[in-house]
Length: 399
Image 1 (spheres, one colour):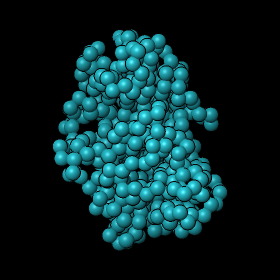
Image 2: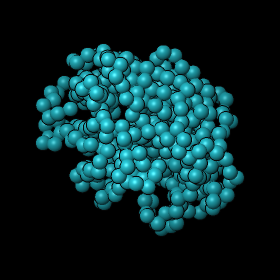
Image 3: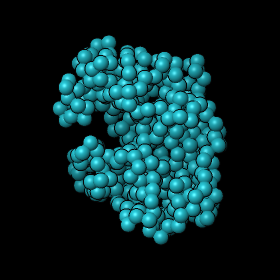
């Protein structure tokens, strides 16, 4: 990923079909409560991606909504590194999340304020412990799918009393959990969807050998449990949490690649285990700096790549489309109090992908949107795995 990249235009589209759980498939009732807050979520199912010079092993957890809790990247000498941060799976690992704003004209049954509920694919951890929903995962050598639906309970609900604008620092955020009784003030639990997922692996030919690809689809079935009306804003994102100590030990580099490779700063290289800033234009949100979170609007970059250097000298990693933007945060004190101790924090990275009705090719809007009861929505994440040269070739070709 350097400034001498050549421009080639071809398609790298996936041919995988969608295999969501049937609309009438069972709904999981495998609620797990009281899991220690910072315990590691272990994988139960694995997918392996084999390229010509690299490999990736992805471990998914049936005990936590099908999230990925391990990502091992290696080379042809079988030298490898596990890069995810999997302590406290609801706020870590690799998973989808969703949320938005319900304005004062779109009431819940119990509240008269603007609400910002957040759900995680794997469960929650905002009550001082972890909780999760176990799901029925089925796997083959090249795919994994969830055969049931999981209730999408909120992890947090933020309240904004009118006329405050969403995003105000005076909002009150409350942790929620299905392990405790509903309470309007201390546990304002919401549940408006049921979730399912599937994922597929494939290979990608590049000028530097064979790389691999993961297509991961997240499905949301609308049930409108106790949320009524139109969302002022609603989106589904995809997040990874990377181990900060491993990032430092293996010299992690993060590359932001612009749509136009002819611009002077077409590729921006940073070390995300350390503090950094992009330009005010790149992190511009509603006329303000984004604060401790790097919020990046769509269109600023086309792709982002993460590259670790193995002891063999091989540079391995993954790349992801970034056309719709996302967010990035260096967490310093998630697990302990010393901000200079890499073990106390993690590197969180979020990317926004469009959401569609399950078999549609037309994206749903992010704002002023409603979801009819029974509607199934799909959000699809794409990741490529390989070495530095293979990922460079893929990024150029996927423009």
